[in-house]
Image 1: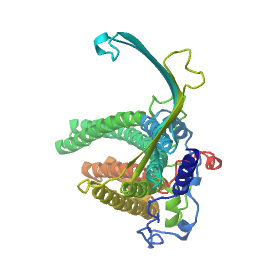
Image 2: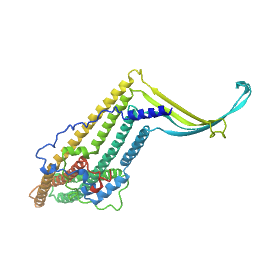
Image 3: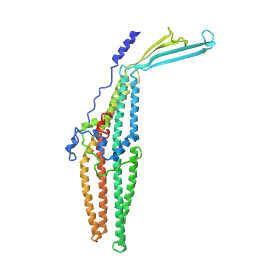
Image 4: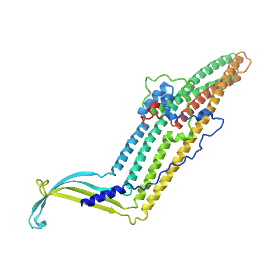
Length: 477
């Protein structure tokens, strides 16, 4: 008996190295080896400086924004769910991995039963007793063909993908908080500009009204001036609404109310972001957590093929225990009461109407789907970075042109106002100058916001926003 058990154990150990998981090969990236070339790119943008190595505290210069990002990392519910998902998948992996080892349990039981006379073999009523204490293994599968190990590998890769999903969620959160903060600041600037413009329009309207009363200005001039005032009031209500909604969106992202000790925001036209050189396309594969998440899910699908293949082979299970058995409690641990059970079982699939073949086909199709998702993730990342690089230089040129346009409109406004006051030009020319200046100033704020959002999105596309400090990169893994 002992030799048989030893032989079985040795055979199981030798066969335990068997695995039917296909050899994994990382699919080739379906993108170009370098960023698109053109006038929107500069040689400095090919410097291999990882955005992920530039912590968000180094990238964002505004202390108020830094404080809000820190608060969001502590309180945001989406990030909290992503962290809890890691714990959940870790627990599932531990459950699946436990199947690789036999589950040993100790059991003790006792029973007393009265048997009536008409049911007794002796024709007399009596009481029977039985007590037992055993230690053993129940239905332990000998993983000869790697089915359990394949499932364990699948669970491990799914768990690892959840860690990357949390990183991706955090990067998206940092970028969302920054964009919401800049949007709120821009709308506040637009609101302030509108309030100042409305005061100017109202003063012009009062002046025109007095001129109309003495017969200098016509009814048309008065109507045109009033139109400008009402249009500014419409914009004022619009920006008041946007500012309130921006604050609500920012509060939701932060996950708590804005701190009462929040520092004053830096002006939008100040130095708010660090210069961020972009890396080469191949660097994205090691920096973007969504790409790594997709690859882990691909590996999980690959491992599932091994489990589906192993299902075609016999499944061997082992149940064994040893202990004592006695009709009396006192004699449970006395000599001669020992008992043991050795019960191997084998299950061999013979006919299942093609279910196993269909299961294997399904596993292979799932792998192909994950390959396509992995490649699409890379293509999306490549497009996002390319768009960000294209926007960088063009926004600089656009902002400078818009500043020049604002300056030109300010000169136009001053000249039109002077000529209107001395009676050289009509009120229509003066109102046109006011409207053009107001529109140019609004556009300048909007362009600056678009530039900031574009830079934040480029930082996110390059995998930034995960590490708080460069030195924490290794510690946070």
